Image (cartoon, rainbow, N blue to C red; front, side):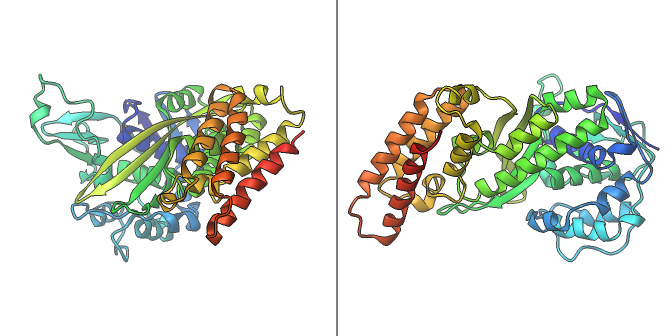
Length: 400
């Protein structure tokens, strides 16, 4: 068995959430053979090899994150007892390289997820003069290198701090990147790429560990996988927080999975990261809560008899490929109905977040105004959008 001591603070730093994401991903993959507790996890000897083998090749192809010039993935590869190197210095190439060589990967029998300060370095799994190779953490893990250590007494406010991992923690963080990655986007008019991750909140991580049920971890991983797929489509067209929340709130598949497994809610964190030179920086950290029963469900029941039909309509209205959500993107900056479309989204958000049924009425009113402003439009694309809004108005009138 591989024994993993769980001592890393569970907080909302990217470092903590990614490492726990990686650990939970392994536990979820090997759920039938894992013994889990709040302070220790016992994994089968083949846990890392099997987890690498189980990586989805299609998902790997979507992971477009590059290592910076300061990163040394080749040293990590060597520390695993492997020779050779990936064809490119990217996370995608490294994951493909390791998946092909999973049977040869060398992992320790004891992993200590404890973080300590050692001179000017933060070290994880390198305590007590460990015999493990001492590796620099990849740059993306150093986003918050001062978090938890910026006290005047320790003088860390004026000193640079290095971050060092053992090969085992390097691997766990790599699997955390794989599991939590959503998409990489560049919106029109921007010169920066945005990388999005979906992570379990600190509260959810603590709950999973405290329950000590690896099968529960497996279930939540499946829910999060469905959430990731939904967000990947949404984030291609919009970065508006309210639109993202609506996509998840009106997703019948996610709600049904939560109900099927008797999960009241799932708390997640959506993180947006951008690269700047040789470093990465966090630009947004948005808490998200998925619920099996939300306030607007009971509100809708006062208007409609067929709730699933109404939810289906709402999910269609906020389809990431539909013109309503596209109105929040840079490509819509010259659309005359843009403001009304955004107000329609905000009205639906009011319905979804607090169950205010007047939000549905306001949504319809703003759609009518969007149609009105496009009346007589000679532009063919504008005419197509007007027809789209008109169709949404007709369909809402036929809901039961």
